[in-house]
Length: 264
Ligand SMILES: Cc1cc2nc3c(=O)[nH]c(=O)nc-3n(C[C@H](O)[C@H](O)[C@H](O)COP(=O)(O)OP(=O)(O)OC[C@H]3O[C@@H](n4cnc5c(N)ncnc54)[C@H](O)[C@@H]3O)c2cc1C
Ligand code: FES
Image 1 (cartoon, rainbow, N blue to C red):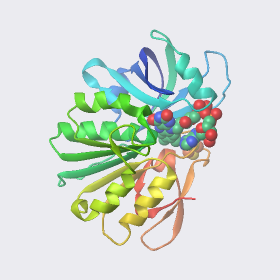
Image 2: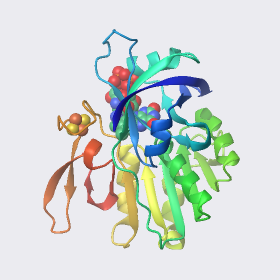
Image 3: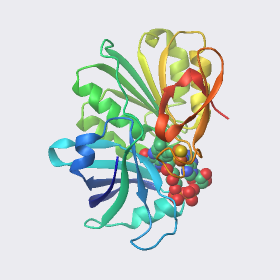
């Protein structure tokens, strides 16, 4: 993990309030893995408002070009400032943060479930596994067609996917979690990776309960330091003995066994 600066190569609008930013960084491309994130200073140089850096999953790594990207939704001041940045400007960030996902080399079948902006870390997971010739299905669920822009990336990397929208304006109509519920027996030998809103992760916990499914959740808790020093991102984890221990999402995660996470 390092404090870095990187040139913005692109800051492209991908949908309503959705942007993909490409950043030149040989260090991140050499050292980061799927499931990790960076923490960006969203204000301009010498300006400290907002003072806290904002965390973003690594969406893609293109090692051959020394370029990585983040996919972000404009939510408040920090992300709005990011959306104004132009090609050629420099961003200040820390990374890679958190732990990369370690895949079970013996498994061939993977089911990825992303809800909303929760698809961001899963896209790189999907790309890595597709390149390793694993059998994957990427289920992405959105409220509406605002995320349609990501489809071109999935197609480019030959990821096998299925999109659901709640309003039926794009892809299949309905909830991604309903699809999982209806088809769980077909996929229960798969390795699951999930990221999305807490409500979605709670529904998945209910679906998986008692089924001996191997499922990892990438958790996106609000953070302050991002490096393990402040405990602001702590979440309760129920260990095998039923004891509740507190873990830092930024340092111990962000990936956890979904069945052990206590979602508030
Ligand atoms: C490990 C990690 C990875 C993340 N990856 C991505 C990503 O790839 N793309 C992306 O768009 N966002 C991601 N997020 C969320 C992102 O960090 C927040 O949306 C961002 O910090 C908001 O900053 P802001 O200044 O624009 O909004 P603020 O003014 O800080 O907040 C605006 C609104 O966003 C909500 N919000 C802020 N932080 C979070 C959060 N962590 N989770 C849910 N809601 C939040 C607030 O409750 C508030 O309603 C990630 C968060 C974490 C912890
Ligand atoms: S954000 Fe400070 S310990 Fe995780």
